[in-house]
Length: 617
Image (cartoon, rainbow, N blue to C red; front, side, top):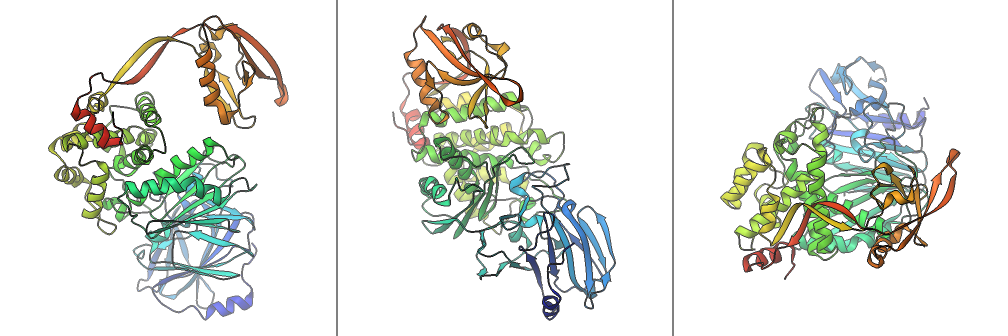
């Protein structure tokens, strides 16, 4: 292994080995070997004879045990003379060090989780580590830096030697930036782990939103996506969220950190991980499109709203998070579900998305919650036991049913308060009651919410969140004059009735499960994997796909000749263009969970609807 520091530098550092209450880390980003970085730590002083040095098994926001100690190797503990101190590996994440009073330095190597031979329990990239020599470093701090058990509330000082021109983008505010070396400080391990760093040659843009400085930092390997583009996409959204939260934001600085990729990730997924003062994104690099803009808004709106929860509203399980033996809270409906709901609701109230689109998203979540998850499982039970492998598959429901819990609570509160109180008010009041430095008891939250709202809200939480009863969505929507039909049959034009996928390489829609074709679709004799090229001589451009389909259906008449051109896959990645035709015919289509306005909506329904989403009939 290549040594990172010269003998001269090592001797100079030896003068820094004073005893204090600070973790002093040294990292040379300019010296990468085999996708690994060597880390040096001058530890705080100890009174114990034996200490345990730990890497996290899990961190808040991930809901998966990743065991970051798996990616650590060549771990050594040294005394003041440079002699090795005995170390015993207690488990995958824990190193027991004896003779701790003589401990002077620790060294170890950290492997890149994005590009690793360790294929078990792949780390979701926004929570992992990216080491690309002289290019970009995705530093999720929990993947690089450990802590001594029972010594988490001590200062952390990180000293980075860096390649020329590199800059650290982070939500942390205590930074000393220089040409070759940066020093970044965090007050304790909790805040360090809550603060990822994106190190690369800077592409940054800053937006001032009310009282908050918002940093947008982007690494785009082919320079397709700039921070200026992202900032312009998010600016309206951030102002809408500021208004949604009452005109001010609960943080002075926030950082959006984007590490775009141009090849498949090891996990096969993309997304983001939230933090109190920042969020870290791993998304596929693509050209500027309307789809990309809305994707950025939806993802960033969710992550940004985590500045409310869990930053200012959290249980003891989060406030005193155990990184190595995590205990989960019962209230994922609050942390993730309410956040997901607010992300979409804020856009609808601000007019960034149409009301019809907002309803479409919510009904799709309802459909997903019924079809893909166990609707009779208690949400608090699922949350508390989410790390159980048998329960974990239900976790995704926090973004589906969890958001619908938020929707139901919001409408119910506005109904009972005659439009004067909703979830926006509730979250503000909970933040005032608790705050960043005060955790609530899991068992007390429902009672606290009931005291702030209405007895009916307490009943709702007990029956539909803690209990196993399905959400009464149809009854709740009636309070705003909306009728929900579980099933509706009608005659309509279709594209053929098969499933539709997307080929990211060719940028075309793909026909799947063609055996499901309806009577109209059977005329074309589609083959599995056919890729849509033209519809009635119009090239199906993905940037305009919704307009193209809307125009097609609007102008179609029974018996019209329809031409569909597809690229049919052949061997070795080649395609053959096929021009297929048939004649338009309506087929019976069963729609599930259809909403419509109730005729003769009364004044209270109108009042609740307007208070809820700003829409007036």
